[in-house]
Length: 94
Length: 150
Image (tube, rainbow over all chains, first blue to last red; front, side, top):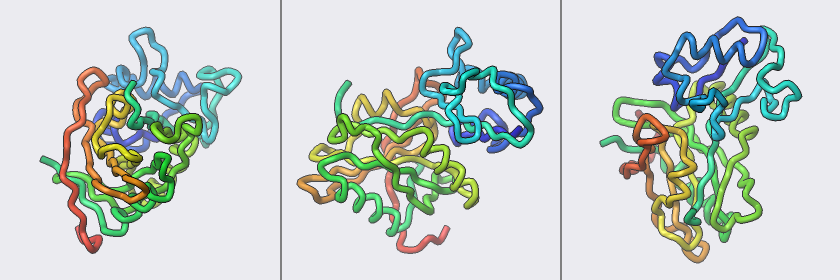
């Protein structure tokens, strides 16, 4: 499958914006990605190994959070995985 | 110091968007190419503000829309270089909310103040640092070019 790397994380993938991995599940694809590029791990996962709250992962057009099997969802070679950090803000103080 | 370079058309489009959505915040993405001197913005893409509960002082782009914007930018050979939003009746300075919710390290966040419906100052801030823990906004000059020459 193809993984799309967002702009801020390309510094950890030697500038590559697209990577191909062979994996059976979304979790497997993310494992393969972070095995090849270990510096990505802390940007994608918390110290407990969960995907960081502000990191959105989409399998094709579906938010992985809302897939019944989430990261355990099976993938096929033609699928794409998009990693998209969230965008929000505003003038209101927290 | 890096600078954000963009065409007059992109600059005007961002500011016009802020005027159109006043008194609510507008938001969108900036597409461009990275150069040794900073980003060269070639296009802006309007996005919907999903914070309809508090759109006068908050903005959020849905991740699903971002995925589509990212896909389209890739098709054009461009990258998401940053984002813009407006501050209705508030200065063009980043807020604590802006910093806390900014996660695109190395990208530019452009803010336009819109006072009484008219675009006022537009400022850009580069999200510097390399982790969530040390990220910070650094002011960067905006260079508006009349043509898209590199």
